[in-house]
Image (cartoon, rainbow over all chains, first blue to last red; front, side, top):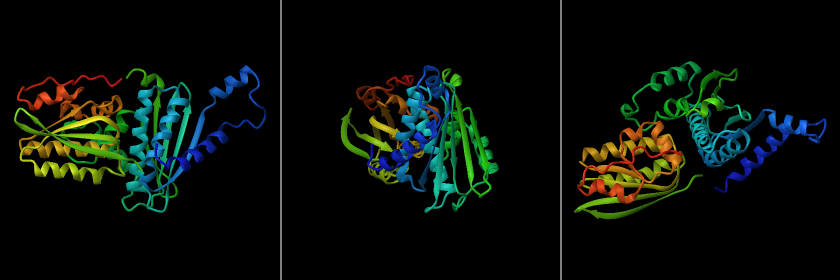
Length: 190
Length: 133
């Protein structure tokens, strides 16, 4: 764990507790407890456009997946990579230094996990949703032994192979949101 | 920021010099470009770059770092050298498999096993089917 984990964890914990708050009543019955468990969990965090925060983000992703989604340890490691690759792309292409990247985790425990990574569209190498989708489509089925470049394995090999859904959306503000989803029943088959 | 430590050790295996390169920590966007230079320097300096990459203490690797590993492999091969990987942790092996590196580079679950590749006893059978979990 690096020293930079603190601000991210603190921000995330705050958001998580806000999401789970029930303003009406505490969970004082078994049925309410059950309801609380089944409620989808949504956690959003915003990090500055810098890879410096990635290590802390990976640790947090690991904790979320281990403790809140029902996915296995192996998938917790896999989602670490998925988030890392998506956010690195957002930093490299979508958000200029001095702006932010927003990451949202959404999970129905025991069923699925969804991750949204949103950039500001201010990066010098920004891509449209169409360009990104074409890029992935072109490379997804490539023989991996034929990829000779240093870059180019993140989205098309790691993210595409470890998710059931990978889609790109143009945002009204000019940015891009990458949305991935994985269903637990499919994860158990791999 | 992620931290990684890379240690180098010369081994003499069957009269060949083999560089044992041990990675400890995480290779990610924040450090991989700088750390990769150290490996390129070794490849440049060795007449036949034979490298044994010990991944036993490597806890994270991103796609760019994997790209570098394949590039080191290609550059070593051009100079009649060889690169093998030893003892990856399950999550590291899992990601190496998903990007297809296990089809290119031999991976062994022990250092001694990996050393045999360089001893002239071709071909040590790689633990290609190491389990990821």
